[in-house]
Length: 108
View (cartoon, rainbow, N blue to C red):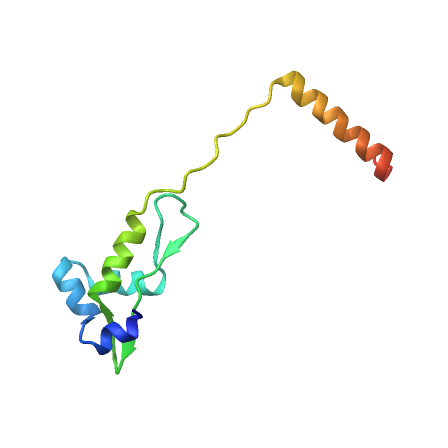
């Protein structure tokens, strides 16, 4: 269900009401809407609270708040372990790459 459908079905809550219920400043909630929060796993990705202007007020839904909290609490993606090459292997691979550059591209 989209945010608009949730609001239309009566699940709307104003930013001020959210702030009051959570004991936060309304500007904090508005910042979640406008800028979002960085995910704990990867600070480059930001999660925004879904909200919409209804007349002169910002409104969201309890379901949108739940999705926002779930997205922030999601476990970080499983990353592949870093493969550390042994020094002699790294040297051989570097020499092979230099040879390819020299032969194919006349570099070096």
